[in-house]
Amino acid sequence: MKFDELVQIISADTEIDAGSVKKVLRVGLITIKQEIGKEDRSRIPGLGIFVRGKDKKNAGIWTVNRPWEKDKSKFGAVHADENALASAREPSTKKIAFMHIPKTGGISVENSLKKAFAQDDIAPLYYPDEYDTATEAGEFGDYKLWIGHFDYDVLMRLGEGYVKAIVFRDPLSLVVSYYNYAAYRPMNEFYERIHAGELPFARFCEEWNGTKNLLTKYVLGRTAYKKLLRYPKPDKQIEVCVSQVREHLKTFDCIGVTEDLPAFKTRMEAIIGTRLAAFPHLNASKTKVIDKMSLTEEDVAVFRKANWLDIPVYEELEARYAELY
Picture (cartoon, rainbow, N blue to C red):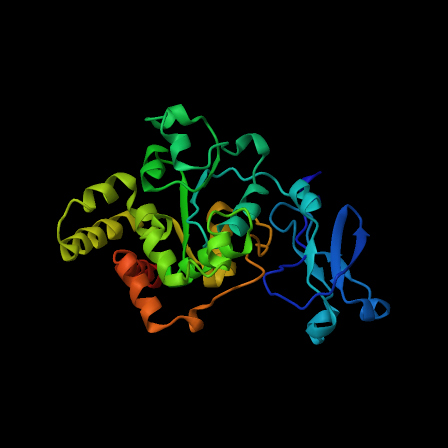
């Protein structure tokens, strides 16, 4: 596909009520999926699409007639077909390392970032232990997109020249999301205990190390985290932890929050110079057994005790986010 055939259809960042029916409309080389309710199928107006530019400076600037904006309750979200958009974009020339902290909306970010790169440019590694055999940047291979559940240690071993990005979330919301995730998936190791009433939220926080100080483990890195725990007093742990996290955050080029992923997307686009596909809402638990409002004071107290480092680290993340944006 030629450069002047690049298109931008419409941002799907805003969620709009959608029914179960999908109507596929083809406009030239572009596929648009429109999700609508059955009762409104006969009321779909035509889509007006007009090219605004034919050079590299203006290519991709299209205007879309969006009649559903007048009555969002009658129309579903309109978004570009994944394959059509992927083939329409030129692969990004930037090198990106996205540190995906679990349950922060990272799967949605991954989905979009991967469409901006050729498949051969995406690193095949994902989890921290998969990086352990490589000790120097050159041993990782010349990939342009590194994305996965790796921590700060791995990020530093990748070397210079990467746009370093991260999305964070309120620790309590993160652990609640983890709990709902476990309760929704029968194959999860905690599923049966949760549904049998044997693993309430407070006990989950106490027993499972996987969610304890999760933000700290990622932003600080495994090596520094282990050293930190050698300090006998929590106050000293917190002091050293916050100081190191503050320095680590300075190395990130783009920081986002789960509650405002569209803003993170906009910042990433400005940095890498490539239009990204809208962030779909993926990997979310459809059934929630708890929410933050349903927690008792005891639940929150147990959570805070189990995540004594993540509380101040989150405050530091918020401060850095406010400083940048």
